[in-house]
Length: 530
Image 1 (tube, helix red, strand yellow):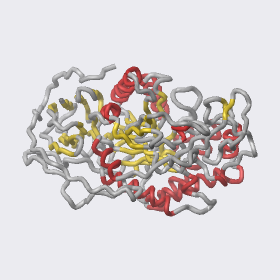
Image 2: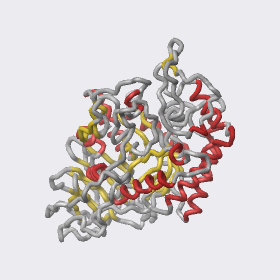
Image 3: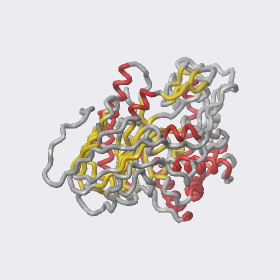
Image 4: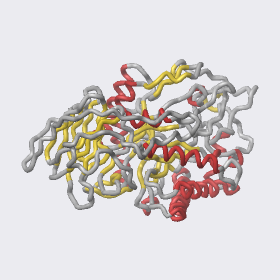
């Protein structure tokens, strides 16, 4: 697996030297206000940067958000933007809006995102955020959508869009609901333990029939109560599955036609009940939800957005995919979660590519990350990044920040969070103090990559430690009307950019790095960043 630059074969045809000098510019950022859940969008009327007058051949110096869809490019299903360019969606998960169970009265499970959060994501080149939302907060009372919570979702989408960041809306759940927790004083049987509450469904849709809440040791979804709740949902008892998919229609309609929303992850980490019935039941759920999503788009006059389909279990494991009838929709993507450590990055990405190809879907890794902080874990992180580049796929790191009261931090009733919650931004516990960015992780996640590329990317390698990128692409048909290649390059120093089949680029300094925009004038083409 290559982790550094590719040897760069010379090609015949036109070539342009694109090593340029830049005039550095200081980009002013907006004042931070912490009282707005979505963060305050920067002043759109103010100039974002100063650009070298000589860098004028490319049509734009910064990425623009246009509708993203799935299309076939060169025989492969990929994400494309409004001009037909292949798009790589890379960023992180944001759990700030999740309606988690609060197990420790002194520690809030989440905090709203601030302007500093959104600005920092942009400063690390993020092109997408997977925004976690909760059914229990959208519809706390059956049949009544909470407009205040929907406004928080909309504000977050707008704040991200103001920083040129797309959003994937994820209907999140863990262990079904925050309303399933072992009552205090319960003595659990041997080999089981009390369960903490998590997140997901509202109380009125949590039907457990009084089943035991004690779970097998370490198995978040394994209690009889959680399994009973999932069974009732898949069987549509009391119409709760119908209510869930109807919620999707209303949320999609409320978001409107904005191009900043890439699409929808219908249900986070769906859990099987009966291994023989689960694929059929899950397919019924996805078909019903998909129909309501499309109805909501029609209500809002929005285009058909991408619908992200997760497997029934963490990936890679056998026997977890829904049935084939979902292929009737041409805007589906495969969105597994990478259990890096249980399997290597190469195995996870390779299995994902194979499954996606079988379905005729593009691959997008909805959650990926490595739990440890030792050198072996860091090596796993780099290997996953290299495999991701080699397969030319995007994804979202788990996660931006994890507070001390998050159920993931506490684990069980009365649990104590580890001293440091290691994510892309670290938090010190029990003080619940943000200790700042985890630069080592962010260097890998925010490495150089192409946000949009004409035609099809055939070869990609980015080395976060060396700050290098090599990219090869080919335009095989006339699908792409856009000819500008847009590349994120981290770091303060002026990058050296060379290539073949390219015009003269515009390079724009922004907080945290640079955007290179260069017209592709010949095919195949190549670009190298040093």
